[in-house]
Length: 363
Image (cartoon, rainbow, N blue to C red; front, side, top):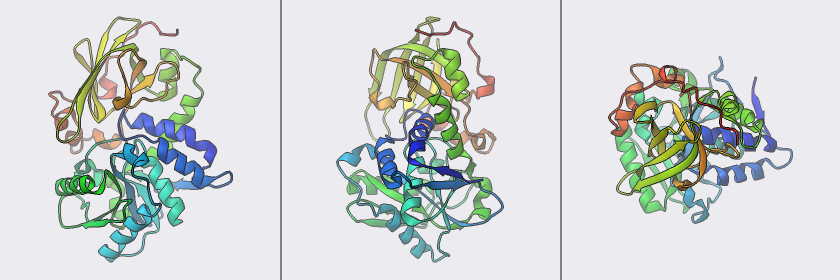
C-alpha cells in the first residue's frame, strides 16, 4: 500500500530523516518549509514500495552545502531541469517515477518536492539508507553499477551533465562544479528500470524515517533513557552535558569530535565526526560505528541535533540505532566502515555493542 503524506506528516518525517542524518546531511528545515508550502492544506504526495511493478526510475537529490539556501535561493526549476537534462542525454525512456539519492537529512524531502513538481510517484528505495558524505558511497557505485550520466542544475541556471567517469571521478567533478556554482545544486542520475537496480538499492528508508518521527512524537518532555530507546529502537550511549567540541578545517569535509559526560555513570563518550558522526568511544573503547546510525539529541526534547551547531555546555543524549541492512554484507561494509573514513577501527555492529545498564536519566 502507498504511504500518503500530508502537511501534518511533515514534522515527524523531518525528525526521522534528521535522525538518519547522523548529525550531518544538511539542514532539512528549509526543504521542510518548501514541502509544507507545496502541499498546502489539502495536498498529498505518496511513496510506494518497490513491488512487482517495474517503472523507469530516476534518483534525485541535492548536493553541496544546503545551509547556503538562504543566500542562494532555489529558482524552483532545479529538479525539472536536472531530470530533463539527464533524460535527454541518456536517450532512454522518460521516467515513470523518482527515488531518493539519500535517505538522511533533506534529501529524503527533496525527492517529495521533485515528485510534486514533476507529477511523478516516488518509490521507497534510495542509494544510502542514511546520510553519507560522498558519491562513491552510493549503493549503485558499491555494487559496480554506473552512476553516470548525471545531471546537475544550480539556481543560477547552469546545467552540467557528467558522463563516462566512475563514482570517484563524479565526486571530484561535482565538488568542483559546486565551488564555482555557489554551493549547491539539484542532482539527477540517468533513468533506469527498477528491476535492473532493485538489489543495489536500500529499501524502505522513507517508511522507516516516518516511523521514527512518529515514535519520537510520543515522547514526553525530558524523556528518560528507556523511553528514548523504545521510541527509536536504539540504545543510549550517554545522557549528559557536552564537555568539549573540537573542529578542524581543511580541504574536503571537516573533521572533529564531540565529548559528552554521562550524568548517570560518569562515563565519557567521544564522538568522531566527518560531516556525520562516524564512531563513538565510551571510556576509550569503541562502542558504536558506521554504518550504524549514531546521533545526538537534545536532552529536553530528544530532537536530533546537527553536529555543526552543537556547543559545549549543551545537555544532550548520544544514541545509536541499527544501520541499513544493505551495508551489513562483506562486499558492501568496507565502503562505509570507519577505515573508509581514515579511522583505525573495525565495524562494531549494533548486535555486538555492549548495552550499558546505567541508571535511567530522568531529570
